[in-house]
Length: 224
Image (tube, rainbow, N blue to C red; front, side, top):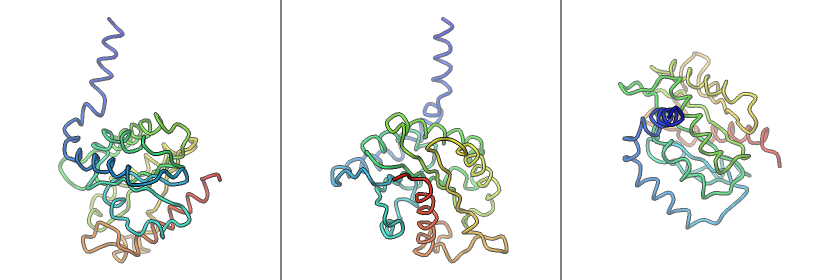
């Protein structure tokens, strides 16, 4: 009886149970991404990128992270609250060299924002989901970028970044890619020149810089 109660408690506390309603919005988008797997050849040397629109819109990724090849599986305004439902489906079909993650929409300045520690807990869940099928593959968490649009809540976003960074430190095959110092000026403000007119998404120059930072981490941490 005690064991049953413990199991029930675990299920009731599961993030996928708590955020069940978030699954519906992106179900079709994820299904379409999985259908696109049929159109590409498997590439064991590729880096699989999952996450939000910054991944989906990265049309210059091949030139920005050359000589690394990539597979992009980003969708809309992904949050960790919905990615927890889809991680296994997005990752499992691909036998790749490593997995990169970028999600930046759980703290935006809205009423439903998560607390930094809640973001960390969801990141841990996503990592465990990846490791179910890719146990020994390197996983790279890309820091949430300091954007002009969400600068007013940068303190909370940076807290979440710090928690994730600390969690990743000294863990085998788990790496945090810090980007903040490249996107904040000497005056302490985000550099507008790297963003589109929406002040949220990177422009071509922003992606070029982003790719350089990410590639440097790959060069350092991926063993040939």
